[in-house]
Length: 408
Ligand SMILES: [Zn+2]
Image (cartoon, rainbow, N blue to C red; front, side, top):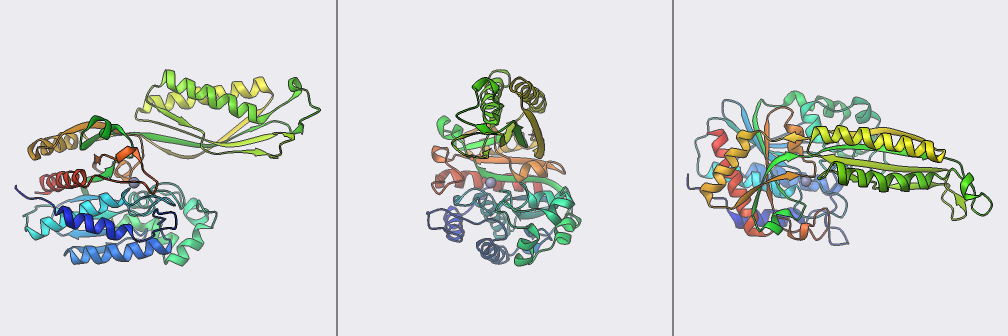
C-alpha cells in the first residue's frame, strides 16, 4: 500500500508539544501530573479528537485514541511525561508518530479488520512511585501499598499529587479493568544511545530490552575521629562502598560483558571532613538483556559485598527497590518490521535496548515490539536531545506500515 505519514505535520505537533513545560534551562520539565503535564494532556486529547479517534482516559491517566473495529486491538504509543530538565523527543516522538499513523489511516480510510489504538502512558519516567506507573497499572501489576502510601521522587506523598491532579489510588488500581484485548503493541522511540548514528543506519529494530535490578544498599561501620583512629582499627563504611564499586564494575565488565552496573547515588554519614564515615548509603543498579546474566550478577555482586563487609568489619544491608525482567521481542514482530523496512527501502539493523520502555511491560500481555531512530550524539534526558527529522519520518512510516500489516 502506497501510504506515507505527513512529516511536516508530525514535526509541527512535536514542536508544539515541546513548548509545553519549557523550563528556564532550555529543557522540558513535564513530570506526570505536574501542571505542565496536565496542560500537555489536554493538548493531546484535543489532537486525538481532531484526528477523528475516540478518546478515553483510564483511572491511571493513560490516554487513548481508538479507531473502533471488531477483533483484538493493535496498539501503538509511548509516553509524554519527561524527566526534570529533559528533552522534546523521549516518549513524545512515539506518541505523536502513532497519532500521525492513525490519522493517515483515518484519512485514507484504510480498511482495517482490527481495532487500532494510540496510547500515551502515565509516568514512564518514574518521577512518581517507580518506573512505568501507567503501563503497570494498565496490566494490573502495581503494588497497592506503594500506590496508597508511596512518596514521589520529589519527596511529596503520592496521595497529595493524585488529589491535586484529580486522580485516585482506587482509579489507578482499577485501570487494568478497562483494558481491551491486545493483539500487539508497537513503540517508536529515540535510541538514547550512539549505536545507530555510529553505524549510519536510520532504523533500529529492537530485538531485546534489558531487564533492570535496582537496590538501595548500605555498608554500616563505625564513625570515629579522623585524626586519632589508626587506619588498621577503622571500620570505614565509605571504603566498603569504594571497594565494592570498583570490584563489582570489574566483575561485570569481565564476566558479564555487555551488562551494566552503576552506583548512581551515595551518602556518607555523618558526612563531615574530619569524621570517619560510619555509614554509606548508596544505590546499586544493574541491567542486562540476558536473564541468566542478571541472576548471575545479583549472586556474584551480593556475594562480593558480603566478603568486603566481613574483611572490613562492616555490615552490608540491601533492599530491592525495583526489578524488571529482560524481554525478547516476539520474532514475528522483528521479522515483520524488517520486511516492511526493506519494502520501504530503509536501512535497518537489529539492536538491544539498554533503557527500559513501556513496551517491555506490555510484553506481559501481547507481542510487543520497538522501532528506534538515531539520537544525534547519543543525547537524551537532557535539553540537547534531538532527532534528524528525516529519520523520524522514516521511523513513523515504518510504524504506519507495520500497524496496517498487523490490523488489516
Ligand atoms: Zn522514553
